[in-house]
Length: 430
Image (cartoon, rainbow, N blue to C red; front, side, top):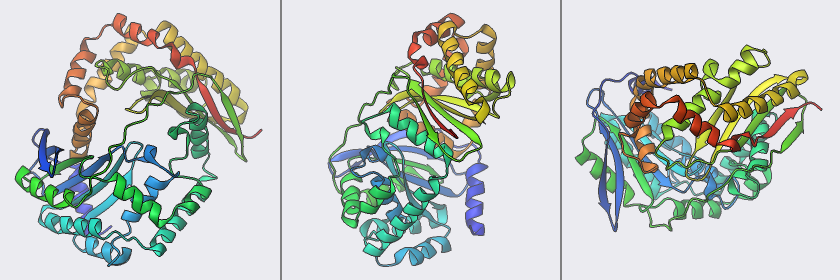
């Protein structure tokens, strides 16, 4: 990374006070494109993301295709190739790149304000002339196969992947996001072209923009870029339910530790207004480090692991509880039984007044740390928009966290008995 890029990175982290976020719309052809925007003139940087809805891993027609498509877009243009294109970017401290998540595909461009017009021109070049060449696909494929081969000895990856197979059997979530050696080998140039041309459209994009830039400038840049995109069929998000069968799978490997991954259903919608209750429950069960039940019972009291964590996942596609820990082979069964026991007790009896007080103090007190940087604030604003919430949703949730009673919390927790329907994926040495 050169010196100017390091400066950009530091500026992204150490920022002054910026204006509040807003959601606006711009007209592109026959649609209104939403724009999440925050202007701040304290530092001379600009970041712009193009987030394509329902174009992530879950939209794969071949396992690993979305990720392979993102990787091809990171290989420059057909005219310049990856090296020359990367040099163009590097000489002006410009970042242009693509990445993919479960539900979304993202193209991002960032630069110093003085170089942002140049950055947009490079992005337009990339969209007009992706590096659609057979040797580029083979290069990306070779890299991906190397990564998958390395993951064969990554026991966390193995345990997590096998857990999804049993938890979401028969659905897109059960498949390897990044593909398998076999599926990646079968992906060809036409597959990638088709994915990009049918997934990245002007009618399924959300723009997320922040930095030292006016909205008038943003609108011009966005129109220049988004008008290059085709209109695509809007894909729906598949609703997926986690299994309640309480299965356990043991994977035999040459390991000195047991890698225990666990998950269960969580019958709760991302649309629920009382997300603050799920946040408190998540913190106290396994998300709060040394303030959580799992950590207290399994590490502090018994010393079976260095750390154990769990989270309550709530997305458009699925809602579930997931967690993990490592322990000695000799204490594998004890640790597994304790996970079940802790969760059972949590949903049976709820929490104490002292635990609720501790959770309130942490969640309210640490709030400023979650909105320090531009990327944090824009990420939260995007999440609120994506999930259909007002942009002041987090502030309202903090007020509700402060005022929630122990009775209300325990009613919420003890309603979710399904959290006890835990499935386990354990990499161990049989």
